[in-house]
Image 1 (cartoon, rainbow, N blue to C red):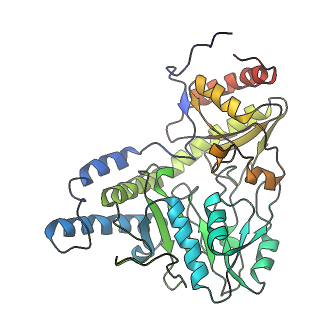
Image 2 (cartoon, helix red, strand yellow):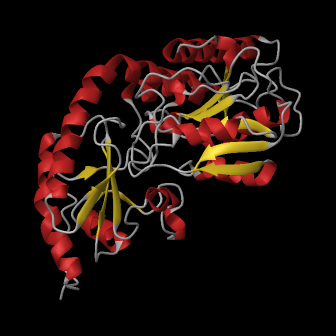
Image 3 (spheres, rainbow, N blue to C red):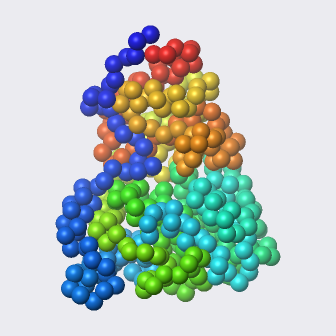
Length: 379
């Protein structure tokens, strides 16, 4: 059959992969353009352009700290969220007096799993059917000899389930690392952690800016080769304009989040109900204690990549497979740990501008798209 006409021009079409990367926030764009002319110099030098860059960097750190409820000297800008995860987690491992074992949930992001495989010994703790860590098992494992660090994400990047980070009762000498990349800015940062990581492009800042938070007094040691920078929690030359733009976007997102979260949560509730009405479709993740903008579902007898491609032809950009390793076409380790269907998986994550009309059109399209794919019809 000849290919159908694309619906890319339909105003109800939408990019729905904000969990991978949120479109650049207007506040970030405006700040970035203004900062490019002032933030080019090395902020560690003493001349006037350097002092100007230093002021911008300090301002970015102060704004970020204020938004996240931490001290400015606890904030470091890294080259990415992944870099912040690696530095935050492995720095706690290196600073630990108890050992190099990292107790972590089975649904952590691949950045955590790779860091543990590279520089520590991992002990995996299972999750329930909603993707929430088995808290008693996690605390019990944390007390075992040789456990140096506990790693638990704030919210899951694939299914949205919020984890009990601030509720854990861990031994005083076992620090907690939390990967907050999926939730930073969208939700209030929980307490109880010694180091945390965030990623600016997930809240509408520029790509290439990560945020590493290390609590004052935490036993953290640089796990990588030393640099001559003042802040030994990072290396190389910070992208000062991008850091300032990331901070501007974060401030706007925090100011807007009560309204945006409420609107997105209502749209996701509509999506969950509409998708669940399609035969042989499983909606996964906690229906209530979750990220407000994200929903994941799996379609029996449908290839996830085929579903993504078909929806893209209709103008909808969504994700499939493991949110962190979809390019490998491997089954999602998150869904497998939950005991959920890993075949035909789709993750929809709303941007701050997603409309009700876009959601309703998607729900109108989905049953027919799923039926055609199940029937093996090309178009």
